[in-house]
Image (cartoon, rainbow, N blue to C red):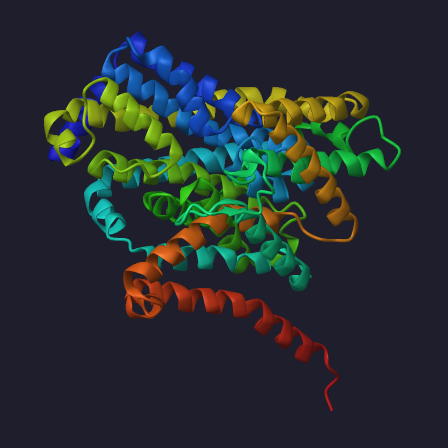
Length: 500
């Protein structure tokens, strides 16, 4: 009853034109931030922060949280239409979203990404409301050994991302892990592979890398061939029949709910983030699908899995922030600043001292999800027209976005040249059939795996990975997931052999 009363109190605080306008403005700005390569959700929240200094605490927080929620959805727009993920968490969305667009089904990709994002966001928020305190207790007890085992589990998804050629996928994952070691050593501070370049002290930034590998490599590949008037069979997007029906969304209920739960749980672990959540959910969706061979070729389940997970991770990341004062992601770290600006200390006391503010924030997140759905539904018909832009205009536009997006990360020309370099590397690798996704997976998980491994060894020696039950279970699951593709390949080979 206390929870219900607090929720009623939270919703009552939203009555009025100012709170609704604040949520709507945050959603619109967040979608724009997400769709713009180079502007991550954390950057969007940080950009909006100065405009909220003089606002009341509750209005400030609901606007910033709306930006955080909406930007996770916005990244799917450019991922589907032009294969340029607006955010790192939308990388997995492009695996099947862009092939759908190439088949003349951009509406499918945009529609499924919208509905999956909204459902994932709602699941994450409901879990946040119901289980904040017990889940936070579990998250704070995570040892570095568990974080390493979790990263190891994420790396096993390389078998799914590589298609039929597991050796090439494994090689690209190792290449991504190698790239993640560039920069200052996270424990000792020793310079590694920097070649005297100050810009490499922090390593290669993920955003220029993913823009180069996914967007520019596609551009260079198209420039090798004669450009058609529009991208593939995109003229078909004018056909309203290319948009999913409600029964099509209903068919994806299992993978959407499954990915929402995974995304929420991953989001709760500080430092894991929405990118890891989307990769793990995509891999799990492929493993549990009846048609795993269609993933990467335009399977709607892949789009739903990625989008549901990265949106659900927002609710998960808010759990340790509000209950323990520990940021679960870069965006929630900015939100801590917003709380402190208004003399609010995140933690257990916040629930008892400011229940109206906390539950008003929960209520605003539910409302923001509904506004995302409405704006996304109205805007999707416009965004799909990107597919109808002539190639002669689209390619310069993609190159411009890539350059501006890369520069915007650190205001550095080095990032622009890095983006171009990754584009050339991606173009060459694609010519010889090497997958791009494992490289990004290695870069995303590399730093987490390395720092967690070394801290765990310092704290408990090498045996700590096997003496802690949670770590051991995750390692055993990782071995199982890694072995499954080989077992399946062996079974398929035996099935094809002639019987005596």
